[in-house]
Length: 249
Image (tube, rainbow, N blue to C red):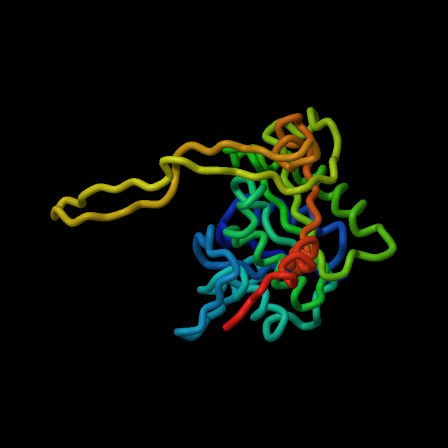
């Protein structure tokens, strides 16, 4: 099996190397990742300047673009053959609820799904990334069990969130739905040393909500969350109702 591994935290990120090591059990692993931090870039593409990819001494490639760029360039130009699966992560931080719309990690896996390649995004919900090494073997077992199924779901990627507990204390794996997160006080408005006003997005307080099978509930209970995400955002439940509206132009 040919495996492409990428991320959004950059080529030097600890999570990337743990995931690549775990993926070694699947077959031939190629790493193509951004040359710098690309968190929260979502599914953005680089269109207004050329991309540059350079090989690194221990194998793989660094690309001066987004995670989505990395997948496109890898599949189209850098790899010897089309990958059988694309793995993204392990992200340094959670990707639950609305995070999946902003996440470069999830978007890399989504681009692979667009290209018709099975894909899994991995995220670690804890803050102590130095503890990620301990997840190599559990992630290896999880990958083998996921890809041992007869067929990977079409037009679907799997988003995996690892709980912030030691791997030996994990209580199992739960298939989950996306939770909901609402932020407050997430924008800082201030003046720089020159007296010019600026705005800084980030931080603040968040509040989770969602069904009993939500992703955030699973990780809170010390379980690995696996959420199937698909590309079709159509709200089919409302199609009939909205078709009944008196819409005019």
